[in-house]
Amino acid sequence: MSNAAARTSLPRYVQISEMLIREIAAGALVDGARLPPERDMAASLGTSVGTLRKSLADLERKGLLERVQGSGNYVRNKRTPEGIYAFFRLEKVKGGGLPTARVLGVERRAKPADAPDFGPDRQGHRIRRQRFLDADQIAVEEIWLDGSWAQTLDAAALSESLYHYYRRDLGLIVGRVEDRVGVAPVPDWAKDAFQHAPETPVGFIERVSWDQNGQRAEYSRTWYDYEKARYVSRLGKG
Image (cartoon, rainbow, N blue to C red; front, side, top):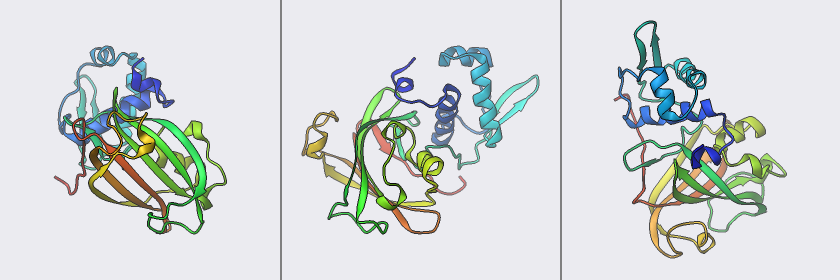
């Protein structure tokens, strides 16, 4: 099992499906491309043919794959592939990469004074995590969820996509986000969690997220290693 797989509790077929979705989004798998034979593909991914077929069936349901009897499996790129990491904008320098996370801490506390207004509660849940793409540690992040959505959070469930957790466990559907990308120094709290020392300038993403009712629900900030990852946002139909 890979380091990335060890950091996630997602079923193996979902991991493979999400990895392929991100490769399609990045253009590594282009529209019309024929995938390798299933047995060869399963061996290259270190999984069983049965597990791979569950992943391919998931892609087919999402309109990203056409399975032609007797011919093979063909990519169908809709240009807006959706997975549980649809809002995760960091990719490896060459594109793609399976996102995983390691939770560093979860705490309910007063919202930071320098954060924009988000949600009605005076308190928020502060979540700090390391982020990985495949085996590479590429970022640290600090997320603040408005306290009105839950009294406590299950820290063990926060290593996956937070938006997936929000939808499944809290009934919060993130409908849109606004990102501001720039450069900022690594925070002191990340000194043992990031390969760059505190005060080192790195890539920086500041995000506000809106819920299904059009209200601000979350604020986050991410510091990422621009030598290993890129912020990527794709617009339009190609």
